[in-house]
Amino acid sequence: MSALRMSELRTCRMVTLGCKVNQYETQLVREALQQHGYREVRDDEPADLCVVNTCTVTNRGDSESRKIIRQLARQNPGTKTIVMGCYATRDHRAVSELPGVIEVVTDKRELPDVLGRFGVVDMPHRISEFEGHHRAFVKIQDGCILKCSYCIIPTVRPGLRSRRPAEIEEEIRGLVDSGYREIVISGIHVGHYGIDSHRLAPGDRPERLWQLLRRLDRIPGHWRMRLSSIESAELSDDFISAAADCEHLCPHFHPALQSGSDTVLTRMRRRYRIDRFLDRLHQIRDRLGHDPAFSTDIIVGFPGETEAEFAETLRTCRNAGFMKIHVFPFSRRDGTVAATMPDQLPPQVIQQRVGELSRLERDLALEYYRRRLTYEGDSGETLEVFVERMSDSRPGFVRGSDRRYIPMEVPGAVQDAGQFVTCRPVTADRDGIVAVRELAVLPLQPSTDSKAITWVS
Image (cartoon, rainbow, N blue to C red; front, side, top):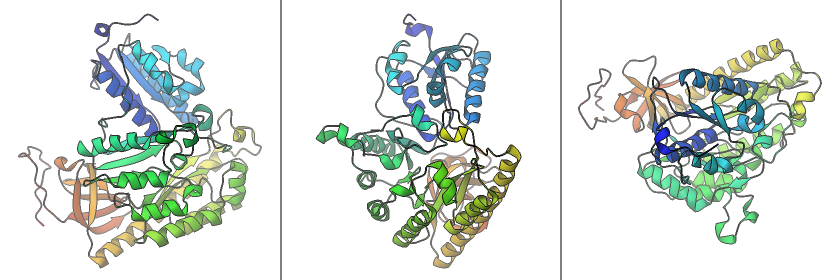
């Protein structure tokens, strides 16, 4: 395709499906286009160029990606669509045949060449903002080398590539200086950050994750960093010590359990067993104190999962005391070992178990919220909530989360979004904790919003 003049393309639309890494990579493309004369359109406005960042973790991700690409072609007649992401990598031919698609990026390293055909002379190496979000995601590494039997990701994001620690630090310093108060440390396999350092020159070698966290913790300012996820096998003594020492790191961790049954974990080709998993959680609780929060992922209905094995998962979740469980019905992915395993479970059995685990998840969440409510109330301590938006159910309240990622609602106004507010917890239900404002925070300018309320401590 011949190069296109800048005058031919002035507007763009960005659509992202999937994980935090995808959202970060979309932001890099957005900034590259904006720096070269593109304007991102409003929802009701057609775009000359569309960029779709796809997901392929589940069959639903594939179908949603196709659906959105077709919608963009209908809503933006004559648009030119670039498709990137994991689904584009996995099924290049099918994506290329969708309406409006003129470029399919199967490797992120091809992006500079692809965007160069649309007037982008150079790609930024880091982001300066995070469009549409009050918290910013920062990608520290890419790729996965594990061979879990159900997962397609090592096929579409093979190998390991860790970013240089100085580059990550500079990026986060810039975001904090720009006013971002929460930074989420993200990657495809965060715990493997730095293990590919042998490929680089000594001066460029990444640190290990726990060393990176200590480096980032030295960045000054009123901000906090949250770790998106980490495997329990990587919750080493060094990591736990760093987590306990880091002032800015939130006491919320997301080790993906996937199943609470050792026999299912064996079929999944996971690297741990339940006793070891629970022991690591106990060590973190013991070292950090103050009841840190744990969330996790569970795949329900893995091939051959018996009633007894599912019961083991329920029991393990209770023993772990998870605050949040992301429940996923097993999705059969062609190209994985699990797709060809015998004893595939009927959909109705999977859905019944999804419902049962989801009910347990709500009970565990309420138990954790009430425990924190009791602790904070007895100690007289206050909570610092990072505000994201207005509450959907309580007029005059804003919604956000505390350091443990507990959903919080507190009196406030639209001006509080993206800021910390100090409050005291009052009540808890399955949706989180409701609190009262501890300190008054006045808007910088007189507000015309009918929901704006001044609160006196």
